[in-house]
Image (tube, rainbow, N blue to C red; front, side):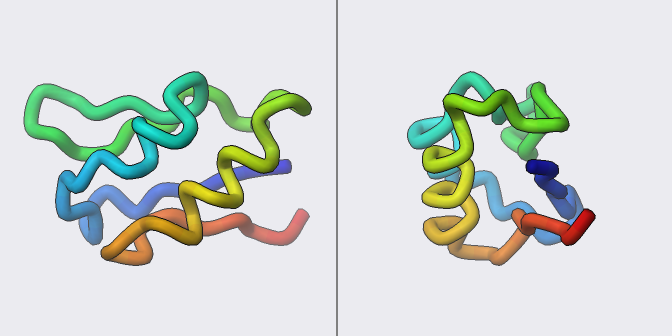
Length: 64
């Protein structure tokens, strides 16, 4: 599984970090940073939830 983050769309809500902190972080400005791509097997459900919860739709799961 791969995950994409559009840093231009990110509104610094931090939902992704709260739901999948092993995959996402925020930089000093609060903008999303992807830590693990591809996503580790055990984090797939968390990443799907983070994508669903992102208020700015800045996260996506691109097709391989």
